[in-house]
Image (cartoon, rainbow, N blue to C red; front, side, top):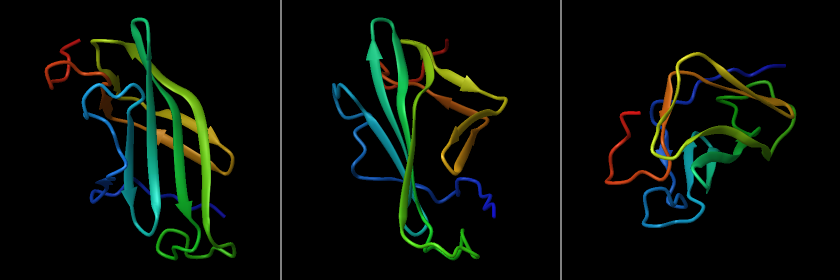
Length: 126
């Protein structure tokens, strides 16, 4: 059975995140929500490119709010390597849907703007 849900409006940036904290070589942005669910974006940089090196999704099948008919329980983890890439000094903007298929989980990014390794604290105009 499928469970479909959007990333909720009350998502929180988890304290284990290191994005925006100085010169972190491999920053990570961890978004937490619900009863133990999280979406992590692990960034890396090489030459003149940055990328989401790994996307990790933790989900809790014991959460009856998102998985009301689940017969399984416990925390599950899925990941996918190298999902997004852009030039350093530019922002990545996805208006149309970008689908990431993982074992038993499909994630869709749409209407998303992100930029890693920002200088001067502001998004690039490029």
